[in-house]
Amino acid sequence: MSLLSPPQIPLFRITLFYGPEVFEGASETIHCVFNVKKRSWKGGVQVDIVVGKSQIQRLEKQLRFGSWIEDLLQVVPCDNREEYSRQGLDLFIQFICFYKLEIYIRQGIKQENTQVAAGFLVLETDEVIKREAENIKQQIMVELDIEEFKVR
Image 1: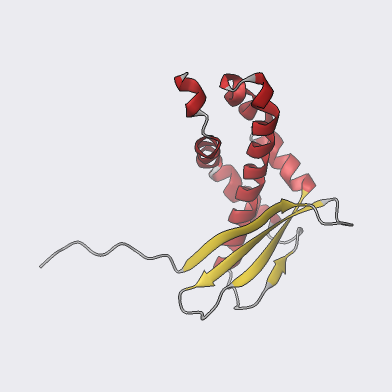
Image 2 (image 1 turned 180 degrees about the horizontal axis):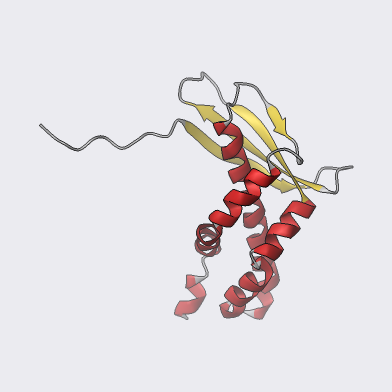
């Protein structure tokens, strides 16, 4: 008899559908849309996570994201730095949206397409982002494939 238990299967499958995007007429907010599928549901739903630009800028400043990404990109050729910086910021915003989505799911998601407004779950999201800052930065570094430039 084995004492090992099988690995925990996630209750939800979450996939980024698109984003970050600015919608016409909503220049102060950024949207990321996720497909969310619970194992017991026959189909998934789309959840539009909206984050205010002011929240993103505040988190960037608190986590010193700008100086961190600038230091990180010193190994990248000058011609590519702007694009990598833009990608890094997009990834940062996606992580903010993802963690806001996780908080929303924990509060009880329904099987319907929905939008989570910019003013909803702001403090909770800020708290999680600050707590997960090093993990987020590490994942951004991996996603940008910075190690490729350090080898050269």
